[in-house]
Each structure stands twice: as structure tokens, then as C-alpha cells.
Amino acid sequence: MRPDERPPPESGSPSPRSELKFVPVPDPYRVATSGASCYTLQQRCDGEVPAVLRDTHARQLLDLWSDHIDAVPEGSDWPDALIRALTVGDPLLWADHAPVRAAGGEVAALLDEIIDVGRTGDARLLRGTDGIHGDWHHQNLLVIDDRVSTIFDWESARPGDARFDLVYLSFWADVFDGSEVEPAAAERIRNAAREVADPPTRRLLAALVALHQLWFTTAHRPARIPDAIGHVQQHLAPWWRG
Image (cartoon, rainbow, N blue to C red):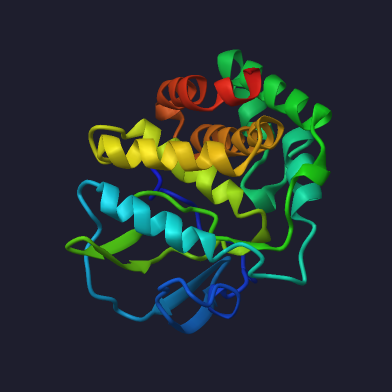
């Protein structure tokens, strides 16, 4: 799955502006529905998506990410929802098991590993009082030269554990290391993801990222299943296999 290919979000996603006060976010000026989909019209922001994420961009992304910590002090049930997603699936976390199981073969075998991670994981390792972007990757930002001017695509934002976003960013940085992501930037992001969470926590977060990739690919981009398997095997499965 390419990170910019996501189905329409569920209606009722929280507005990030009220929760993430220090991150440059396009102001939504209209939120509405059309049929079964919801949409937002947003402020036009200066900048462009970088062809290559530079190390200076990565430093700023990590600084901005730190503002997500404890941004939603009222908290949520996200830790329990993550365990539920891993073990039985949760469409609200983009983690439905059915299409993954139906694909069979190596994809279904990976799902079995993910289920085991959920069954043996501990929700108490996870946070529920942070802000989560939900799609925090190397192409959901605008830059002006070396300055990150805007972070966009907040439709999946919700309270939870911000370390998920960092593991997600690390995954995509690893996938595109040396092409769309400067090697120094990928290394910086990778190290940050390892530093903020101990191995048992990274194990759970990586499994959810993997499940999301497998779900989206099997449900919406079946031609890309071999690529998804390769990416999960190389960049995510080692985090739970130890």
C-alpha cells in the first residue's frame, strides 16, 4: 500500500486542532458528508510535498511529534482497542481480519503471528492520553525549502498512544530509505522509534502497523500483496519476532 492510498475515513473523527495545539495543521472550514463518506474542505497552505524527506525535515517531524504527548489528558480506550484489533480485528483502527484471512498463504500466516502478539501483549504498556495523527508518514507534510510548513491528512486523528505514529513513520522511512527518504533521515527516525518504546511495546505497535498494511492491501490493492508481504517481513515482523 502506498501511504497516500487510504479509503474514506469514518465519520465523526475528532478535530485535531483542539487537541494538537502546536502542530501546523490546515484549518478545516467545512466538514460534511456525501453519501456514506465524510469530507473536509481545508485551508490552502504554502509549500510542497518533498520529493525526498531530508534529515532536517525528519528533525522537525520528531520535534512536532513530541507535542502529541499528553495532548488529550481525558484519555481513551485506545490501548484496549489495539489489543482487540490484533486479536479479533477492529475496523475503526483500519484493522479488519476478514480480507487478510481470506487471502490465505503467507498473508494468513502473518495474521496468525499478529494474533499471537495481541494474545500475549499487555494493554497496560500502552498510552491513551496522547494525540495520534494516524497516518504520520513522509508524504503527509508540506515543506518550504528546509522548513516543515504544514502537516496534513488528519482525518484519522484520535486520542491514543503517539508512539504508534513514530513506529508508522519509521516503517515508511525504512521502506523508502535511499529513494524518497534520505538515509540520514531514515536512520534518525528509526533510532527515535527504538528509543521511545521498549521492545514489548514496540512489538504491539509494529503488529498494528503490519495488520493495517495487510488489511488495506488485501481489501483494496490485491495486486500489491507480494510487496506488502515483503515490507512486513523485512521492516515490521522482526520487531515482534525478537
